[in-house]
Every structure is written in C-alpha cells, then in structure tokens.
Image (tube, rainbow, N blue to C red; front, side, top):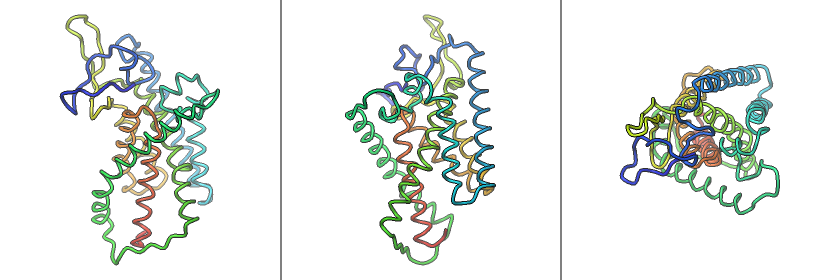
Length: 283
C-alpha cells in the first residue's frame, strides 16, 4: 500500500504504480479502475460519514454525559464492522484494520502481534517527541494559564483515564476515520490528478511522497470530515483545530499501513492535553 521512499529526496511525487505492493489503497489506482467505481466509492464514503456524524451528534445531544463516549465509540466501531471487518481478510488488511491479526480468524500470530505493537508504539513515541514541545507552547499562548502546574493523580483513576482514551476514544475514531473512511476515499480519490507514461501511455495517479509515505487527497478530505464531526458534537470553533493532528494520524496510517500507530499517538495527544488542562486548572 505504501511505496518505498525516494532515495534522493524526502518529498517527491509518486512514479507510476507498477505492482500491487506500490498501490496506496485496497484497489488498483491505475486508469483501469472505472470512473463509475470511483464515483460509487466517494458517494458511499461521504454518505456513511454523514450518517455516522449525524448519529454521534444526536447521541451527544440526547444521552447523559456519562454514556456519550461509549455510545459514540460503538457507532464508529459498528460502522467499521459493517463496511470492513465483516468482509474478507484481504479487505481488512488493505484498510489497515487487522490490528496485528487480532481481528482475523484463525490462530493468532504472536510474533506479528508483538512486532505490530512495537512498531505502533515506536512511531507514536517519535511523533510525541517531535510535536509535544511545540504543542505545549502553542497551548500556553491559546489558553494563557496562570499559576504553577500542579497535578495530584490517583494511580487507578489515571490508568482508567488512559484506558478510556485508548480504547473508548482513539480506537473507534481511528478505526472509522483512518481505517474505513481514509482507505475508501483513497480508492475514490487516488491522486492529485493523473500522469501518463510517455512510453506506454499508461495513466497513474499523482501522489505526494513524504518521508516514506505515499499521500493522496483522501488525507485532506478525511481530516476535514474529522474536524467537522468534532465541531458538530460541540459547537466551538476551536474544535476545528483537530484537522491538524488528524493529518498526523492519517500520515501514520499511510506510513505504517495500519491504524495502530495512529491509535497510540491519538491517545497520547488526548492524555497530554488533559494533563495540561488539569495541571493548570484550565479545564
């Protein structure tokens, strides 16, 4: 799904797709994919996104606060199951939703699971190391907290909060937005236009290659829908800012070919933000 990075540059435009391993989505991204199929894919993806956003918005408005997170998570997981997980194994793998093989039938490959978990955690820690310091200073400028940072944590409550962020919030959101939606949109919007091979006449999508990841317009569309979904549940313009971390989650989806790293980094981001809010007594 993700082509190898260009050895001469960190940012480039993808060459023509020449093998299944180079393809950035479940289906071939060549001109052989009928335009009608791509239209059906984008209509399906946007319709599902609209229905799911409507469901989580209604749930957020009508349910007691203590049930909202769980209900929203179940909606995301239910949609992902309906459109990916209940399908064939190849589709699950192509959507990055195998989760180290946990959701696939048959005997669990422990080596694969450990390898996938280590890769996901490693990428998440790398992104945290790169982004958390600038995020902290940006957070300070936005919230203007007063007083010193103080935090009194109860170990069991802290573990419960981390578990909730990881399993109830990050996992369902990444499964739906990056696993289903971004993958499906990648089939519908394979590239930033098309290029024609001057020798063979074959057409292939133009994709941006960044640090080993092959990126398509689905990254931007998914992030916009992700941000609008957050704004729909809580009508605060600041909620639209999640567009930017969504780009990081989507990049990790492309770069690692799975959603594990995005889940881990997503949860880390939420926990870090909560720690700052509580420690400075802002929220």
